[in-house]
Amino acid sequence: MALKLDIPMIVILGGGQFGRFFPYQFRDSNKQYFLSYPLECYGCEWNCKLKEKECITKINVKDVFNLAMEILEPS
Image (cartoon, rainbow, N blue to C red; front, side, top):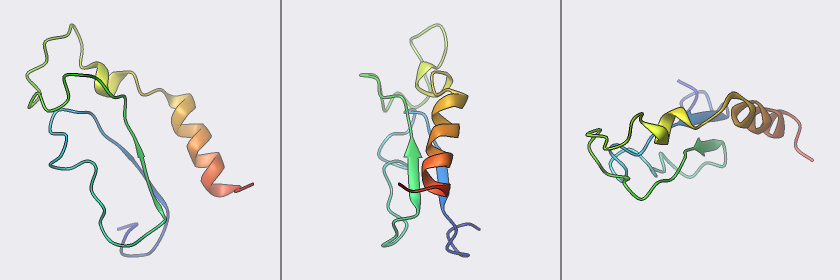
């Protein structure tokens, strides 16, 4: 919806299907912001060899908040 309404969006993605959904440019837009936690095992199809799916769980609220503030109040 954000894309259709030309509203900035933050996309939080893990690496389970890296390359299929991320990185993905929906169209020529400078309003797409992606957050991820890169690991060597990207592309694992969510068959995680780690204790937890760190590619998604290591993205913290502070990073999302800081990016949102950056988008809302560009310097």
